[in-house]
Every structure is written in structure tokens, then in C-alpha cells.
Length: 470
Image (tube, rainbow, N blue to C red; front, side, top):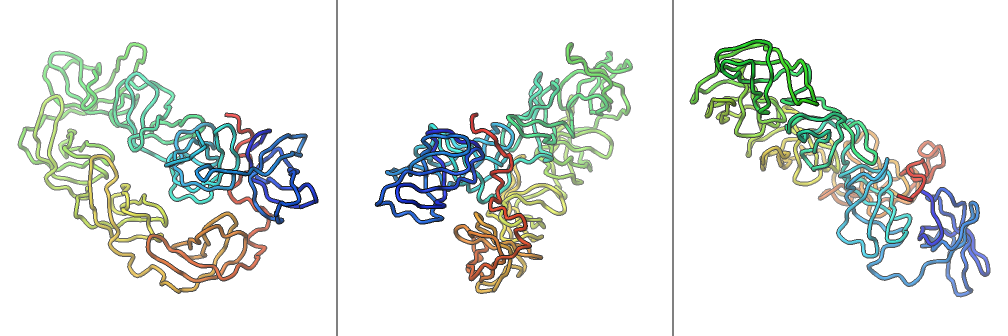
């Protein structure tokens, strides 16, 4: 990032003279060093981190003073805050929310994506705005390549993500408002994606369930409720499967070809059906679709009692099969430090009661199932795979990080405070409660760990942002 006069930036004292000191600012791209005006009473030491008010800038050299007299509730460069990244502002930059930021009106985090929960260090403060970089990522947010449930807006090219409400630009108007699945393609000043599972959305080549209208060529999509002009005249109302052949956005008309017909069933029938994961739809063995009374988090064979037969068929699940049910014990695949997990048998996402302590597959009890939201589960046991307090460890340490990475282990060690430098760290486990914590005895420099000499592991100088003017 680039700085300009009157910005507050974080500097590190590199040299001290009689009336001046020099400071390095490696996180700022357009400044090589800053000369600070000091007096004889200043008690600075080399390597000390100080907040600097930039007075002037000439080429790659700046002049400044050490900012004094801060209020206890004010945030300065060097401070860290717990935040959740929110709306994208530009490529690699998101606005962020926090409980209280005192003198900061808006906070921007460089190098993250929406809904990432992290600890960030403030590098620059300007006119009530602060710019920070990640120090520790607690849980990842939306990523390019994610496939997520969304709902289209009728007549609009924008869909809304079901889990968090962010808007996704699809590039083409949707004829109706319906549930779909989109793949995230880019995150810049807006989130862009493409439809990978149109479900009932009228898209050329998509096959939908519909009910023909008596003595006409029209069929009504179910669900969806839009008319399809079919390729034949039918005299009775019956369930059919239609393949969409043309969608005219200008006239809002849809044409299709009937590819399968089936007789409508009767209220009270109990039928075997396959629930379609990520929806409230099920496909009966007889070929018709059923609108279920609950959301199906995964694809599963279920038993359904039909409660309504008309333009749509509705039913109540009486045997849930593999669908998550409160009190069930399931196997989940978890990652250390994350609350997001996946049921290994059903392939659906679940939310843990608390972040996982280690990576692996473990048994969990379904605590709550609420609509389309991820089922809430609690891990029953880690099967004796947690380390013991006092157990020794050896791993790789990184500066500006609070973890030591272990090789061939299902977990990393959290170190309270920043590690401070690269190297091979040894120590012992101190806690295995809310996370696995340890205490470092020593760090031995290991050239294989830091072959480039880069002391900036979060990449603040790697072109994440070239100008803080937003």
C-alpha cells in the first residue's frame, strides 16, 4: 500500500542520532525509510515499533514525528483487532466489521474475502479510515470456486446467496425467482458467478416438471409457476417432463418439448422418492416431483406421504433416510480451527458448536436442524487423537503468526502472541481446551524454512494493493 503526508503508519526504529532517528516501513510500497525528529529525552531503541505521523514525502524518503498522546480507545498502527470481512471493495480488499473501533470510521482489510473471520494488524490510518492486513485467519470466508446455494431475482441478473445474503452477478437475467446453485468465479468490487445447477430456472436444455393445461399447448412449471409453450396439444391435465428449448428474455416466453409423461398420484399415497440435496424437492420412483415439507441437505431415498396433488405435488417426509435429523449420530470431516464441516456420508455442510481442535473424521450428534441452514452438530469424541498437555512438539515457526506448523500432524500449535521470527521451534503443549496451545522453548533458524529472507508472510508487499485511495 502507498502512504501520503498526514497518514499514521507503523515504523520500526533502525538507527538513532542526536536529534533524529530513522525508521523502516516495509509494509508501505512508496517509502524506503522515514527520518524522525526527536529530542534528547527520547528513549528509543533499535527495533522498536512506533506509530509515525508522516509530515512530508520526497521520492522514497519521508519525514515524520512519533505520534504521542493517544487515547485509550483509539487505534493506532500496530494494533490488532478481531474482525469479520464484509463487502468487497476492490480486488483483494474488503470492508470489515468489529465491535468497537474508537477513532476508526471505516476499516479495510487487504488480502481477504467476504465473511472471513480473522485477527488483523492496522498498518495505516488516514482521515478516520484504517487499512489492515491479516495476522491470523480463524475461519475462511467466500472463496473463488465455491459452489453455493442462491436465489435468483425475477427479471434481474443478480442472485442472492442463501447463507449470508451477498449479491452475485450472474451476467444474464433470470425469468423467475427460484433457488439455484452458483459457482463463484471472481471477487473484485463485486462477486461474480455462474449457474451450475439451475434446478427449476428456465434455461435452455434444462428439464423440468410441469402440469399441462387442459385443451391447450401450455404447461405450468412446478415449482416455478411460469408457463411453457409445449410442442404438442394435450386435452387433459397431467404431469409431464419438459425440456426447455428456448427462453426469450424480451417477451418473457419459454418454449419446450415434452420428453416424458406420467400419471398424477393421489393424496394419501406413501411413495418412495429421492430427495434432491440442497432443495425441498424429491423425485418419486414413478417419475413425478414432490415438494417436501422440509429442506433436504443431501440426496437420499425417503418415504413420502402425499398431502396435496394439483399444479404442484406436496408431501410429508415420514422416513428420512440419510437426511439429518436431530439426535442422529453422523460422521463429519473437520479442519482445525473451523466451525464448517462436512457429513462424510451425505456430503452436506454442517456447523460445529465450536471450532474443531484437529483435522480428521469424527462422530458428531445432530443438535439442531432448521430449514436450509447448516445443521448444528457437536463432536462426540476425538477418539483419543488429541495431544496431552506437557507433550513435546517440534515444528516450523513464522514471524507475525501465532501458530507453529507441525509436519505430518492433524493439527498446528497456537502460540499466545506473535512468534516473532522464522525457524524450527520446539516446546510443549500447554492446553487442549478451546484450541491446542503451546509454549515455545526455543526457535533455531532454519534456512530451508525462509530461503527468500522474506519477513512479510502475509504478503503486504506482493501487490495486494497499490494505492489506498478507494
